[in-house]
Amino acid sequence: MKRLIPVIVLSFVLFGFLNINLQQDRWIAPEEAKSVKNPVKSIDKGLSAKRGKRIFKTRCMICHGVNGVGNGPGGKALSPKPQNLTLPMVQKQTDGEIFWKVSNGRNAMIKWGPILSENERWDVVNYVRTLDN
Image 1: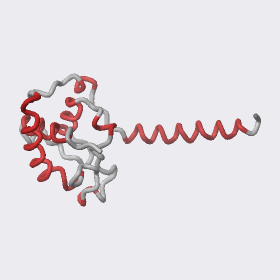
Image 2: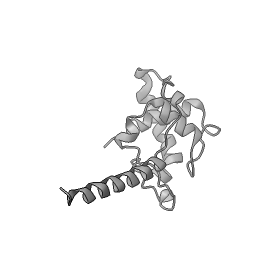
Image 3: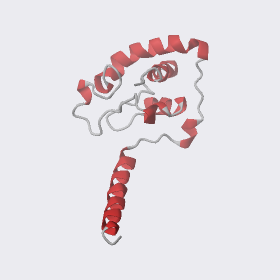
Image 4: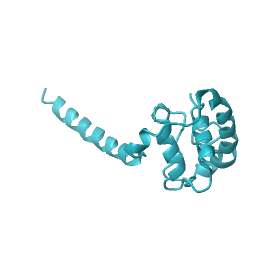
C-alpha cells in the first residue's frame, strides 16, 4: 500500500496539471448564449447548411480545413490551433453557443459579427452541424 501512495499522488498531480491546461484552452461561450435559439426552421436547415458550406469554403476552410477538422493551411502556425469542429465537444454545444463564437471570434479567429450578416452566421452554424465524424 505504501508503494501505491506516491503513484496515486503523482497521478492526481499530473491529472490536475493536464486538466488546468485543457481548461485554459477551452473556449466557453457566455451562459446567455446557450439559450439563444436558432431562428432557421427545421424544414429550411438543409438549404441554410448549403449556403453555410459556401461561406465556410470561402471564409473558414483556410484555417479549419476542408472537413472542419482544424487542419487548414492557414491554421498551421496558429496557437492555439483551429478547433476540430467535428468533435463531440463542439457538436454538443448549443446552436447559440456556436453562433456566439462565430460572431465574436477569439485570438486569431476573426470576429465575423461585423462582416457576415446574422443570417449568414446562422447558415455557418447549420453547416457546422453537418460536420461530424
